[in-house]
Amino acid sequence: MRLVEPAQEWEKEHRAYVEEWGLTRMIPSSFDLTGHDTYGAYLKARTLRQSGHGNRVPSSNYFLINDENRIVAMVDIRHELNSFLLNVGGHIGYSVRPSERRKGYATRMLHEALGVCKDLKIKRVLVTCDEDNIGSAKTIVNNGGLEDNSFIDEDGTLKRRFWINND
Ligand SMILES: CC(C)(COP(=O)(O)OP(=O)(O)OC[C@H]1O[C@@H](n2cnc3c(N)ncnc32)[C@H](O)[C@@H]1OP(=O)(O)O)[C@@H](O)C(=O)NCCC(=O)NCCS
Image (cartoon, rainbow, N blue to C red; front, side, top):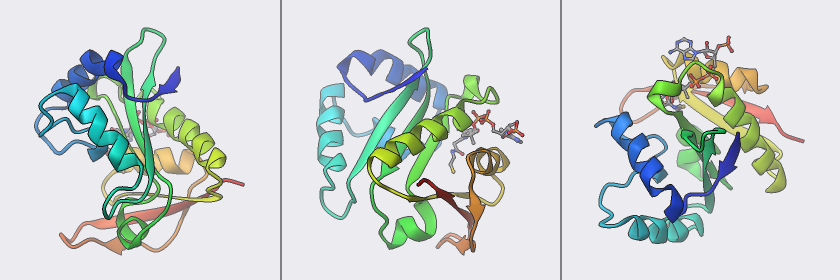
């Protein structure tokens, strides 16, 4: 099990994940292939986004790969918090492939992502989830998340906010 960065060799697997995901909004959005004519164009846009282009903060994103070279999960790590991330998005966003859920992968991947945060010297990591997302809340608590105040998003969704000490 390892984290790898998106690259041309993962195109087929990435597309298979997106296909399995279906039509709902991709989480994390940094893995959305919509609007990119080729995988190369997606990778180019990713490089720009990661550098903190426009109003974005610098970020990194990774696939979690199993021993059969299958993408089982995806994670996006924001290196800083702006006001949106502080209230709603947090430092880390993730998803697990629908057919691979409830096998501990989200818990494992958040653990790996905290290692990346450590390398980035992020000592307090904010992770958020929707009020009704029990699986995500448990994933965060499994990794030491301590709950802070919640925030009500523009669309009325209540976001639970957790800090993880990453010293
Ligand atoms: C939320 C999500 C990441 C969980 O992934 P996962 O790999 O199934 O999580 P894990 O297997 O590590 O499970 C963590 C815990 O949550 C529990 N859990 C997972 N999904 C659950 C569900 N739908 N309902 C209740 N409990 C759930 C597991 O049983 C486990 O509990 P335990 O620690 O007491 O054993 C996954 O369902 C997903 O990708 N959802 C869509 C995207 C999303 O919501 N991303 C998070 C945005 S904040």
